[in-house]
Length: 221
Ligand SMILES: C[S@@+](CC[C@H](N)C(=O)[O-])C[C@H]1O[C@@H](n2cnc3c(N)ncnc32)[C@H](O)[C@@H]1O
Image (cartoon, rainbow, N blue to C red; front, side, top):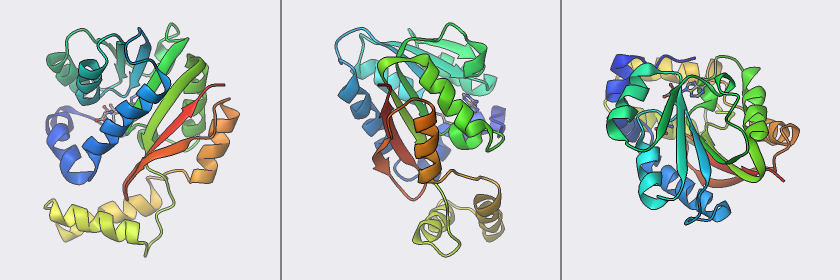
């Protein structure tokens, strides 16, 4: 797992917006996506998996005060910032497998987590866990990188341009590019579709897409 330590947590909110064009738009669309499946004014249990510093929770709470939000995250520094930001959201330190009681959920929102899992093998298992925790009719919104990133693709060039614009130097950009092409291993759309099918979820629809990440919406039949 990439480490979300004190320093990374401290810089996260500003950094996310600088490095990821469309960060706020993706979250806005996530709220619209949840509202497409869940009644905005009726109680619903929604899990924020990888709740981070609590940005998404804060905005969901404002728009859907009737919903019960539960945030899970394995990073204490990220969760501490969420604790400071939020009231009325249940926050838990850990990963999904630590919490057997999180079942029959109406919704799961997880942005920026899939590509932080330590191995490719864990990615389909993680999607399967989400499928198992939803009630029939429940919705999963996942924001993640979708590969492959080809060496000479406009997508990769656009990302490099963004990193340059956000002040990163040539060496840092080369290293990031290398990691993107070799280590990050974002799944392809075909793989994701297969993993969703195996998890008993609908084939996901793309609600939002940038060079960096996509927002996928699926539900449990
Ligand atoms: C890129 S941040 C995204 C935070 C927030 N969702 C957002 O959109 O701003 C990724 C978060 O996922 C958390 N994380 C990493 N592995 C996780 C896992 N297996 N389950 C849940 N959260 C995880 C990290 O600690 C970090 O807070």
